[in-house]
Image (cartoon, rainbow, N blue to C red):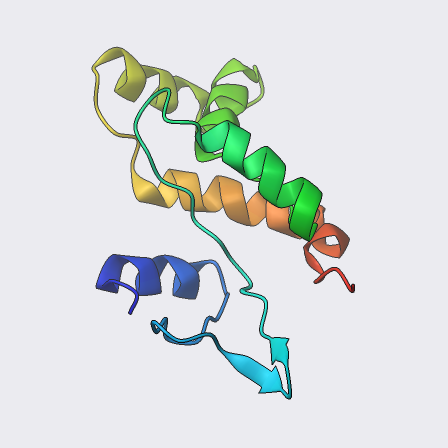
Length: 120
């Protein structure tokens, strides 16, 4: 089952996801349901990027890295959040979730056609 934080994040992003169970979710005879969103979590150097590359290649997902989005936004001179992100990172603090979510929403809106499920 998703945590309260996970459910809130999906809600804010405008996504829905069935409750996670230990059993596979079936659409019909012998067809597994493909999750809409997959979160890959781990510490620095754990292989998140490697696993995401494999997931993209095998299942056709679009990979969004919150860290990459924050770094790109920080470097953008016309950024609405650049200075704020820089301050949080310099102070060793976590960037507020509202900023990260707004960046994810922006990418999702700009590239809306990339987020349609891949057919196999």
